[in-house]
Length: 149
Ligand SMILES: [Zn+2]
Ligand SMILES: [Zn+2]
Image: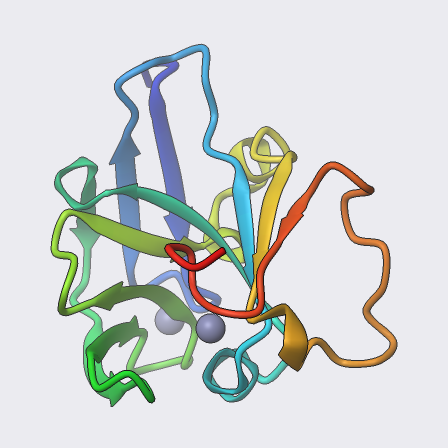
């Protein structure tokens, strides 16, 4: 497999995917989302995502289910998950078809460890109290979505 491909799968491995990165030397940085929808969607305190061009992402086995969520801002959030084991794969905003957020925990181990740099935390005001000091001082933290500051 070429260096610039990342692969991933759900827990039951009925669905697998591939991400083709434009630059083999640069791995995507992580965006952590503390929003209340991500808490429920992941069953955890936050979601960890890599944001990549939609065109670079493709499923290589199986077909996920789609749940159409809607945000407070009135945009639809399209969430893909495995119908068999429930693993969340992606979330994508209907007002930006160019990019997709892939849940980094679904990456295969060798690629997950390479996506190790935290860039930003969003919906920071929803952060659970025990979640502190992720990624250090240089991480950008905003109380809204990625476009807000
Ligand atoms: Zn599955
Ligand atoms: Zn979120």
